[in-house]
Image 1 (cartoon, rainbow, N blue to C red):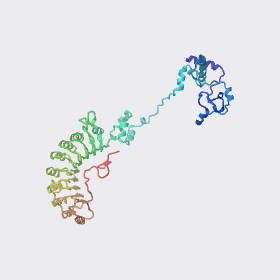
Image 2 (cartoon, rainbow, N blue to C red):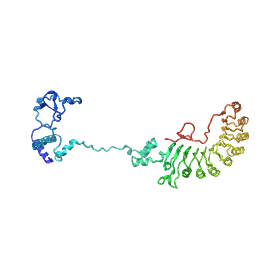
Image 3 (cartoon, rainbow, N blue to C red):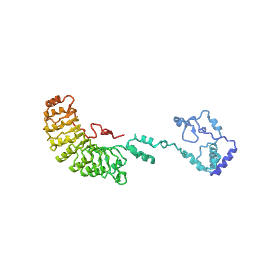
Image 4 (cartoon, rainbow, N blue to C red):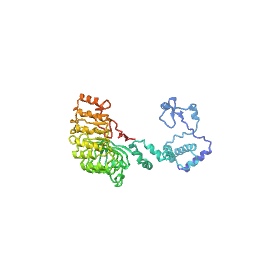
Length: 459
């Protein structure tokens, strides 16, 4: 039946005095006993079966009232088998439409469309909510992003173009901690492209190449803002190190502990003229030529650690004779048979302002070195562990150094009775064998792993 037929039925019914459809459930009294009361639209379900969910006959509805109600059962709209039944069904449907819809709406609907409306879920209107982030300035959003972990910033960059732009802001990436991680090819370049200032890569594995085409750091004109870099125990080859240092010109503190180097690495490193702290402990590959470039260009060094680098006597003599006056903490431990008393004298002349000096395991220096060391008026820490040619009587001469506060003589070559004599002569202000390991130029000391040289690596 089309919309025209529905309208005709509604018009005819509207002329009569038929009341609107009663929108309530009714039971069928024609089915007999009280226990078999049925819903008119569902022949198989009794009221007793539905009582558990709170369904039952309305109060005041009796079988006589239901029989007196001549209004048709409009919910029984099953498929008709004859034209007469079709007409009756259309009449029932029209009554329903009359009680719920306006005539204008009925003119636009057919019977099939009405049935689809009964089955389909109504559409919800789209509500355009206010985006509060659009009302915030870039500075406020950057302050919110500042408290997010770096991995969350990566996901935030996918939200929209504005967030992507803000997530790349240099202020969010000034501190980076990628220690104990594997960096894929180009990952190190991405970190430098975001202009990190403090970077910890201790125990990291850096894949080659560190820079790939398309990133900012790949450009020849790119210069990194990196100032503090910890590469202790990192796995990175010499070519990648050379490429890294070629992008850096402003390094102030650097740790390459237990990282192999070559001349190209040392040449690139020497271009950082502002370098103040350099940790080369246990580094292999240091040559006389390469270290000469570092000493010639890095004249602002304050701390240097070349412990257990197995430098030859020529390289040690070069270091002791050409260290800048600014050096006040020096670690030359582990030189074994290569450091001589003459080199110690050159060291005292080059660095008269030394405050900390570690000569542990330099087994060839003798008591003559003590005569040179006592000339260091600002010395407050001295390590002579396992220096077997220095006896306890010579160590007593250190009482002339009024600023001395700590003395390490580990190794067993000086027994406890001799240590007591040394303590008695040096006085109670000197602490003997207080430290087992040197902290000179090292980025981390003790269990703290969230800082390097006292600077936080995580926001």
